[in-house]
Length: 248
Ligand SMILES: Nc1ncnc2c1ncn2[C@@H]1O[C@H](COP(=O)(O)OP(=O)(O)OP(=O)(O)O)[C@@H](O)[C@H]1O
Ligand SMILES: [Mg+2]
Image (cartoon, rainbow, N blue to C red; front, side):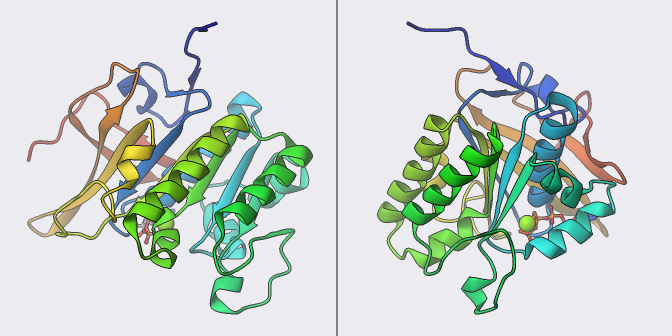
């Protein structure tokens, strides 16, 4: 039986109205952009809103920042990750420490070398404990570097996104692009194909300032804006100006 598509609002001000109310339930999305463009903030804000506004627990797989740094950085937006973790509303998987040879006393630790199977086992365990509905893998780029063959990486990403869907998780996978590196959508040229949608964050230099903007590049099953909209990172997180446009 085919059921009506359910929307999962990100709760990010100005964003959901660009895409008919939000993401599709149990689908995976890519958020790509250069370093410093706001990918990690976008992804964490999606989880924090899930917890605060929609009572949906979340999982955050951190492959590039140690969980302790995330907790400290996000407190500046007033997001108390430790409190959510204590309430079993948030699980942070430390997939960073072992990669760089550091011990970790985190509750959830991913093993090295990177192995999709063990990451997914970890997420399944977390699912039993907190019953998450939203997930983030930040970022897939560092996973890609451990798999030299783009075709294999594509299969691994497909495994991650499909398992997330089966586990009932609506997920955001982040992906770093190199500024001026041609393809602005993904790092390895394959990430875009395995997801239901791709959101691109730009951080463009215009004369002597940098301007942030966002584009919904693709979103299957969704009537979405085809414009590029400005956004800002405020003391409360990302705010998208959905009624404004950025011209190239
Ligand atoms: N409290 C804050 N208020 C305003 N802007 C902030 C605040 N905290 C961070 N920023 C901005 O957000 C940027 C970092 O955003 P974020 O970590 O989401 O980027 P990213 O795309 O994940 O980068 P990377 O690929 O390097 O991980 C900072 O460089 C800074 O410009
Ligand atoms: Mg980041």
